[in-house]
Image (cartoon, rainbow, N blue to C red; front, side):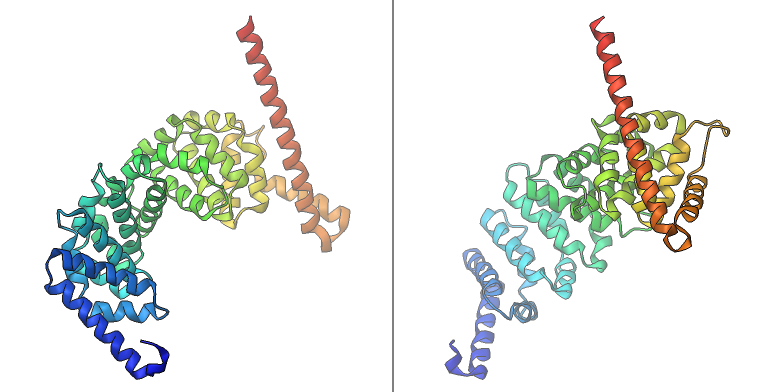
Length: 366
């Protein structure tokens, strides 16, 4: 099938090969089907025109028999059919929808329950992730009962399996309005994953989005406080995260504090949240800035005489800046002043932590 054959003959031979493969996978015995599934994957991966190949293979009727192979008790049959379906679904919305329509979700859910083989479970997780990116598939996947199984993989799956599980959960849960709130058992592994990843990464954005959703339940809020470094990890995300992850993190802490200020205020303060929140009022997204101001007000003493709202603070800084540099440089100077205030607040916060640590050491030694 070289170029010297001419484009017409080349495409004819390619179509002939597709017809041969589809014939094998539709009519062949199990070993023939396994070989054909491997050919499908190889054909897609090795062609420059892989998008067209995906479409032509689907049109030739290979999807239904591949889905049926997922029910096989033969490990190889399941594995090669998963790989072939993943390749057919990649970057092809119509194929994703057809795979679900052909009944792939129930056997994929069963494969997620496998404890004795990480390979099949990891491939099934990747398949759920890929299929969940197509909007028409989301309800079918959610209704299948897959959410608890994806949460389970957060704790006991492979590294790739846990990453894919987070992304699949994010695809499914953020598509609902109001969002479906999963079991709070997801919080400990999500917090641990957030600890380990770069706070400004896309993965952190998805993880904090899931934590924010679960924090809307009372069990979710309790799980955050009961997980080691749960609140601290959110505070660190506010300090080091992207615009998206900082917004999710501050929303979570605000939700907790609003629900029961007396319960959560001290816990949040003890993790040194003030410097990061002050910085967020300057550098966060518009919504994050507003939520940071609200949370700062809730974290201050309840006495109105002692409380200076964030908006008043910013107005004072703005007024000072306008008198110092005039109206043209007001915004720039105000930001600079607020930066200094954040830095001073951080220094004071560190001093207080050191004092508390010293006092604690003295108490224990005595």
